[in-house]
Amino acid sequence: MNGAYRDALERVSRVPGVRGALVVLADDGVPVVEELQSDVSGAAIAALAAALFRRTGLAAGSADFGALETLQLEADGGQVLIGGAGELIVVALISDDAQIGRARVEVVRAAQSLRAGPALS
Amino acid sequence: MKTPAPTDLQRWSEELARNPASLAFLPLARAYRRLGRRDLAVQLCTRGMEHHPTHVEAHALLALLHFESGDRTKAADEWATVLRLKPGNFEALRGMGFRYLEQGEIAKARNHLERASLIRPEDTTVQEALRLIRQREMAIGKAPPAPATASAAESAEASLPAKPDAPVEAAVRAQAGEPPSHPAPKPEAPEPRVHRSPAEAAQRVVSGSRFMPAGAAPQPARPAPQQWAGDPTLPADPARLFEEMASSGPLLGILLLDRRGLVLAGALRHGGDGASEELGALISAAIEEAVRTNEHLRLGGWKTLTLECAGAAMQVAPVGDSAMVVVAARRGAPMGWVARSAYHAVGIAERFMEAYA
Image 1 (cartoon, each protein chain N blue to C red):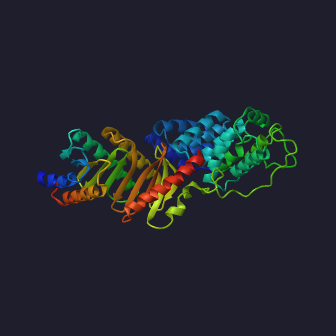
Image 2: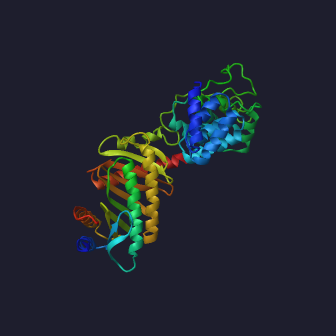
Image 3: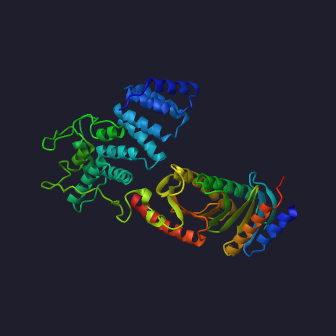
């Protein structure tokens, strides 16, 4: 199954300006697979991204906006993109000069492909 | 004032006996207050707040109880707590406004009363007090308007009643749904040391002997303002701050939140009562998480948080260091358009915050 995850991540990682990508267990914040530059800690990003996605999803649910599908956090020094895929989330770290539109499309595609794939358990 | 039914008292008491953390303390305290048992009501509130320290209504009730007991300092403390928990609480804004007015802190009084006026423009006690304060400021022309100067304080002090219960009483009693304890004053027969209404208190503060130039004629009454004096282009009702933007098209609503997630202005067309408050609180928590994420990844300050959900799209953007706007649109709205809407909303919010300050 990891092969499918790696394929999904590779498409994201190939986008210029993407510093790394991970597939993470949404509830636990544990990385399943990751492709990251060496200066980035996968475990920490996984935990933070999962917590951010969970909290934001709660907010969306409270307003009756339905399940959270994608989250984009834009900051002065880059962006974090997260796509929801059921039990999993796809996380991408993106630098300022990245092709953000393309990265976004690839994160959404990766999330869709994981959602359509076999369940983790 | 409705007398509480004995069966209700019994039911609430039993519920509290079973579960000391129950919210039944609140109706029970209200009931005891109506029965004239303020001591019991205060005890119930105090104990209830051990379990619910941030319960706004409990603090507001305690403020009222302290006020009625003549302890204005404690009442003001509770109103201040209410305002920390819910900056837009009308009763607390009005209570603090008149408290400051009593103390001669005119600028603070005006600030609180203007905020109260934004929430309930139809409240005549607040409007009258504001009208008189502004009238006085207009009358003094180029003099600095309304800071709590020594002369203002002296003037206020000189005009304050010897009787401690007077100036705020009418407004607070009105808040509690009670008739004023004094009959309405006859303008032609004023009683110099007793204020019968907040409006009169305001009149006395602003027209005190050292504050009103001799011969200055009172200004004619003006209708209640439809726009806020702080910025006439902003609507009086903060819930309608973004109405022009959000009333058509795919927008579901726009909220202005403070950093704690409390709604300062705006509204959601989507969801029922309390949806805005709940969304605000949760978005604020999400932003805290976002800030932590950014710090860890050394990404710097956050600029926007954009969400696509099954039924809606949202963008959250900061307004200075202390607030944020949440723009919600129907799913399918172009994200670039949502981003532009958020940009415009931030501009409006900045003006609101500036005028608010």
